[in-house]
Image 1 (cartoon, rainbow, N blue to C red):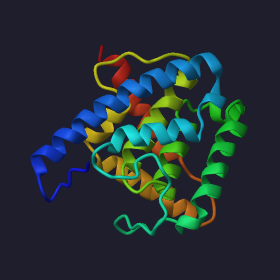
Image 2 (cartoon, rainbow, N blue to C red; image 1 turned 60 degrees about the vertical axis):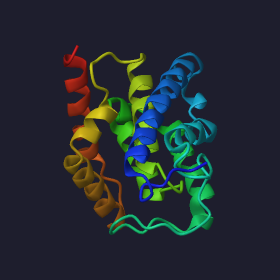
Image 3 (cartoon, rainbow, N blue to C red; image 1 turned 180 degrees about the horizontal axis):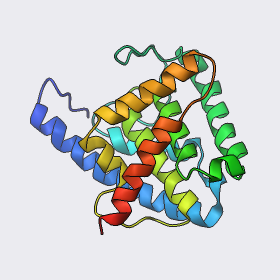
Image 4 (cartoon, rainbow, N blue to C red; image 1 turned 180 degrees about the vertical axis):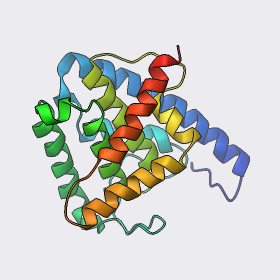
Length: 201
């Protein structure tokens, strides 16, 4: 059963909020597993489950990679036939760079990559932003070696004020379109939110 926003906006929002709570519970469990097993625990099955939790009763194919074109504002994500390969490359990038000192210098750089790249690929029919933010937070916690304290998590802080988030994603897109990675703005933005979270006990 699916609730559509246009049919019942209030019920849709209620379901969406419940989904976010369920997704966060799943995210906490996934982080605990990742802290014990290492970065290899972060895989496509984890991502699929996080997406499914985010869109239950909102779309019919939650947790499955899209099989149709999708459009997001001015961004046209890659053709759906490329999604599987792009996601394999995404996970390879995370694994291969997990212990590199260049990424250790900035505590949120790999999380910034995950946040940007999932949004750029847009692998799912719905809930890509929610899934990207969950994956980002997963990687932040793993890099810090613990489930982090704080009244509001980084993903919640992003949701409260989205314009800096959108601008940082656009800066990463612009760099990519020019032929290189530049995630500094997004990583700095995440680092500022992380500091806010850790100070807000």
